[in-house]
Amino acid sequence: MLTGSCLCGAVAYEVEEPLENFIHCHCSMCQKAHGTPFGSYVRSPGVTIKHGEDKIARYESSPGFYRCFCNECGSVLPEDVDGAEFYFVPAGGLDSAISVKPIKHIFAESKADWYRITDPLPQMAEYDEIATEQGLTSVEQSERGGVHENHVSGSCLCGDVAFRYKSGSARLMMLCHCSRCRKVKGAAHAANVFVAPEDFEWLQGQANVTVYDLPDAERFGNSFCKQCGSSVPRQSENSPMVNVPAGSLDDHPGIEPKAHIYIASKADWFEITDDTPQHIEMPPA
Ligand SMILES: [Zn+2]
Ligand SMILES: [Zn+2]
Ligand SMILES: [Zn+2]
Image (cartoon, rainbow, N blue to C red; front, side):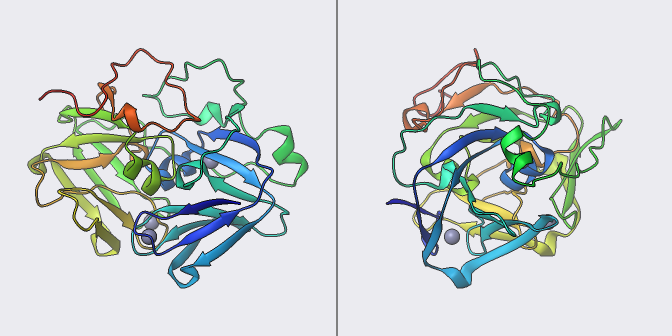
């Protein structure tokens, strides 16, 4: 039996095999829910919650389609679809090694404008035929703001939390493959944009933001909307910068990824195929 869990450890689950139809989903809802350019989901015939059922929050992002997350740490958990005979498991949340690999990209037409798909996997514009046969219909895409003159704006999936930073103020963007980022985002890697606090402002919903600080970690944590679980910006006490999850942005971040970091911890099911520089841990300052 395969196992998975959230970052804080409150929620643990078992995942039945066979795992099938492992996909990267680039829909705008996955981008916001994970805070990353895409979610990576593998289909399982059964998921059993071993503990922490009472910590699981559910957000209905499309009719009958529930995005589940830990209400303590915000980790993305297996999804629940009304009437479906399977579960969508975010591969980043698994603790067990798996032998299956992603087979395609879905919702490639909705992909983040700063992200390039460089692997040879097939790209579907929306859902693939398997999902369509199982009754999944096209998701409603949230409105992306396009280019704003003076600011780069972002928001969570439910829309309660919104923020922005000054155009051109992003200092750095990194794709982090560390095990903590993979687990909390439930994804192949995090995509973090760093801006100075003076260039950043909350527009609404800051009261709905839950901040989770990983005990014993110098600065690792996760901020998320308590309503929908989406990753939202975070500033830790020990960091001079605000960390903005790129998937939460409605505009182009105004910067491109500068590095893949912590690739020694990379998921074994994910291959880096772009030419962005790679670092075993952190690049030298
Ligand atoms: Zn948790
Ligand atoms: Zn998606
Ligand atoms: Zn929200």
